[in-house]
Every structure is written in C-alpha cells, then in structure tokens.
Image (cartoon, rainbow over all chains, first blue to last red; front, side, top):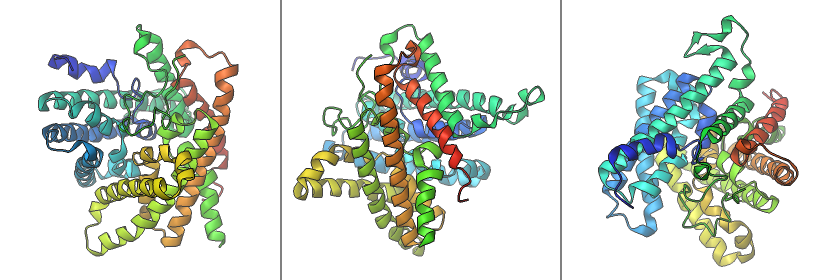
Length: 229
Length: 192
C-alpha cells in the first residue's frame, strides 16, 4: 500500500469510504439504533471506541498473530473491548444501555470493526490504524446522527428531544419504526449516489472487498457480489 | 405445547428477525439475490441458530453460577465461531452432499448478528432450555421465510423494472425491505 498522508487516512472514512453508505457495512446497528439522534450518537460513539482500540491492538499484534487463526484472534480482541464498553455504558449511561439493549453486545459482530481489522489494521502501522479507526468511527457516527435526525424529526417532530416540527404537524411515527429505518437508509444512500460525481466509486452491490471473510469465501458465491449494472 | 407454538409463530411473523428486529440484515440484503442461495443461507442459519442456542444456554448457566456472567459476549462469540468451524469440518468429512449446498454459507454465519442475537435474547428474556430451542428454531424459520420472499421479489425487480440510476443496487433493495416490513407490521400485537 502506498504511503498516504495522515489527513487522507482520517478523511477516507468520513466521505470516500464511508462505512455505512459506501462500503455498506454494519447495516444492522445502523437501522436499529438510528431511531433518534441520541441513540444514534450513543451507538456511534460506542462503536467508535471499540473500533479505535481494536484497530490499535490488532495493529500492534499484526506480526505476532499467525495468519491462519487471525479471524478468531480479531474476534477475541474485539469482544474484549465490547465488554469494556458494555460495562462502561451500563455504569454511566443506564438510559442509553436500556434503549440500545441487545445491539450493544452485538457490536462484536459489527462488520465495520472486523472489516477494518482485516482490511487496514493488519497491514498498517499503529498510528495509521488508529487514525483509520477514528475516521471510520466518525463516518459511522455521522451517518447515524444524520439518519437519526431525519427519523426523529419526521417521526416524532423533535430533534434531540427538543420540539421542532411537532409544533407545526404531528409526527409520523412510522418513521421511527422498522419500515421507516429501511426507507430513510434507502433515501440517504440514493442521495449519496446522486451527489457523488465519480460514479465508479459507488458500489453497485455488496463488494467482497469489505467482507471480513473474503478469503474463505468461494469466488463470492457465499456473499452478495452483484454485477455492476 | 401451545406455548411452544406461540413462540414459533411469534418469531416467524410478529418478531421476524430481519423485518421487525433488524437482526441479520447483512445476509438478508446480501445473499437474497437468487432463490437457491437465499434458501441455502436460510437453512444454514436456522441450523446454526438451534445448535448455538443448545450450546450457549447451558454455558450461560455455568457462567452465572460462577458469578462471571459479564463474560457472556466474549464467551458466546468464541463458542459460536468454534461451533461453526466444527460444523463445517464435520460436514466436509461426513456429509459431502449437504456440505456442497450449505458449506459456502457457513463461514459467513459467524459474523451474522442474528445468531449471536438469538443466543443473547434467549438469556435476556429468561426462557428455559426447551423454550430457548424453540425460540431459536422459530427465529431461523422467520429468517428463512423473509429470505425467500426477498429473493422472489428481487428476481422480478432486476429484470422487469426500470430503476432510477441513483436507486440502483442497494437502495432499491432497502426500499423493497421497507415495504415488506410495513406489511409484516400487520402481524404486530398478535401474541403480545
């Protein structure tokens, strides 16, 4: 991999390789926790913390971990950090813990984290990996906050609990429910497709590049590779 | 007996994992391109879910008895990863036919949040052992059900419709899922 400057690594996750909107990773937590701004932000921060820590540790250990058992090793490291985050959130933000519920331990299987470990942290230096973690984390949090804002504004008429639209019109609660999640995600992604000038950067499907287990996968038949339309 | 039937029906229709609870979205969006892989993935997930629950439920009792229940996340994900690996090795050696049809999906299942999700939610909702197994089976069936519907709809979508450029690829699949989950909301409140 060519030498990239530090800022480019940081900005990479935010726009060009936004994990949610461009790489299409981590869809479950994106849909489930973007019901409101606060939930989305909390989820984004938790995942970012895990992502940065696991990227650093995996980058430090990248010469020690044998190639054949690297995925279980990564999962162990990630699960350790997820447990820490889980305990911290439970202790200091019990309300957030309640609203995120099941999705907090499920950060373990968030494909963004395993994907970045496999794609970036095991090939790059510690500082670069940390920056990549920060960039990707911000990209993830940013997307969650945008989606959370849209869903909360239209669904409940509030933003961060402050009444905004609810003075003018009643909220359409469907937006905070499951169908609204899919719908807003589709619209936001289509909008990103629309404004991105360089169409070649857009994945038409769920590429194998982002997949953590691409090596075990038989010519992409297990996963979702779609032909470029 | 009625209790178990209710668990299964509620997991398939009311609390359908991909369409009502946002679990297992990655394979739901990713592998639903054609009917055969959708069916294969659905069956493989059901299989792993039931086995993983069968293994993780007693482990949680053991962890609780030792007072180290907070290790749940670490232990569960490692057990699931090891279990999936074992199943794959066993299938490769003893069930070649089944391995050929389901084998490619197995490595993907480790990182499927629906499997870990069903194990944890069984513990959280306080189900006993047989209830947990039925719950896992129902969740798997619901996943299979959603996968098959999605594959059917997508088969028509790709060939016979003109999709706006920005919506091609992932967004149109998400919109389809939105409409599907809207119709699944109709089952809401059936057994709660």
